[in-house]
Length: 255
Image 1 (tube, rainbow, N blue to C red):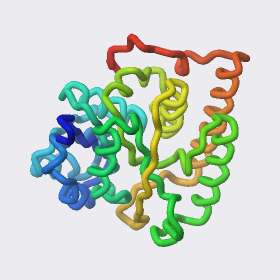
Image 2 (image 1 turned 90 degrees about the vertical axis):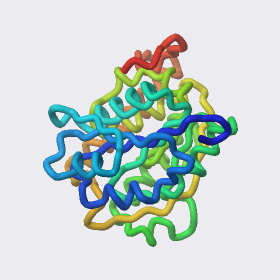
Image 3 (image 1 turned 30 degrees about the horizontal axis):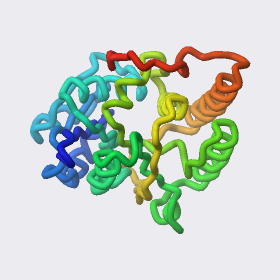
Image 4 (image 1 turned 90 degrees about the horizontal axis):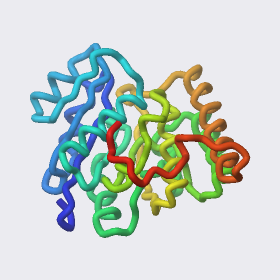
């Protein structure tokens, strides 16, 4: 706990057996109260390793997609009465050591939502080994989103995030994609809800153990990001309304 807030780390997993233990070992278990892994029908030993480590495991009966995995992650964390939820990929691309710092930014009421940015800091991307084409795609998409969404984030595409339970309970995640564009749609909802958003610099690793979508799916994701930004601008301008961007103060967190 931090400042009396219960903290959960959720791990959306798919074939993460080779990196799960090192990820888990670097989580500060003096601060984090519960670790939850949602397995999206892995074909390796991810589930067994998680159980051996004492992680709470939820298994999908079929591969439902990255967005659907996160929906189960957040639903389960709220069932454990978490006040703060950290979403961390178990492929060890992002350092688990930042979970405490990200939690504190929410626990003391500074932010409702925190993104760990791979872009902040000189040479951060080069040192982490991000492919050049991914870097330039990230920069283009982020600039487009900042322009249409009217926010100033260093990036919208980090998979390392922290949320207050109040924020999660207010979002209509059931209306979002089950695919990778879920991440961007979620940020659009958060900005529409006028929640306080913060960023923290995060070193990353790109190696054989780090999961990554292929080029074809990256292109699909890119078009999804552009579409989300356009929908946001149309919605805020009252040109066309989108249900997933509407206020939902009474939402009870059921996903």
